[in-house]
Length: 116
Length: 115
Image (cartoon, rainbow over all chains, first blue to last red; front, top):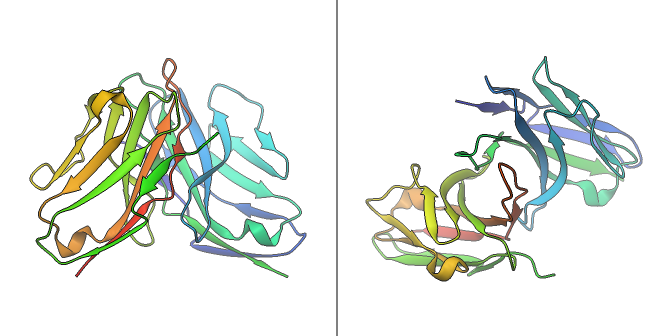
């Protein structure tokens, strides 16, 4: 069974600075997808970024980028120029590419605080 | 485009009472998920629908939980009877599944408190 581990329960960053959230996963599959979701206190889970395992190029979305290391099974999220609105819980998630699978497997999350 | 809609946002009930949650997915999305999120944890899948068929309900406690997705659009998740341990957030997500991949979009969730 696949597992996702987020080893940082809480992180803090100064506004306008850069922060990196860690995520590791365990799988025997070679084809899969990885996601970062943001969950503000309002509870709405918002997709931040998506990475296909077959792509070597790291995904980027504006201030958000990932460092995908397939061999190390590592998938970290870098937030540049942090803003107050980035404060939230961040969840790393794994999705198998197998046709019979479909659900996301989540880590326990990292609570990010942004200091003004 | 409207996102995933869930209601109610909050529900407080006494143990042994029934409760139901409703989800309206994004228009055109063929796949619908119900997740359970306990405090301080990531969501865990309860059931997945593709159109009107439940294709993965292995994590659904069938003795007290039931779900339906009539006509392959809206879905209802029911608990009867509720127990104290059911207090959690119930999230609905939907996606347009093409081949073996999709991206899931979540609703705001229903926070259930069982007293």
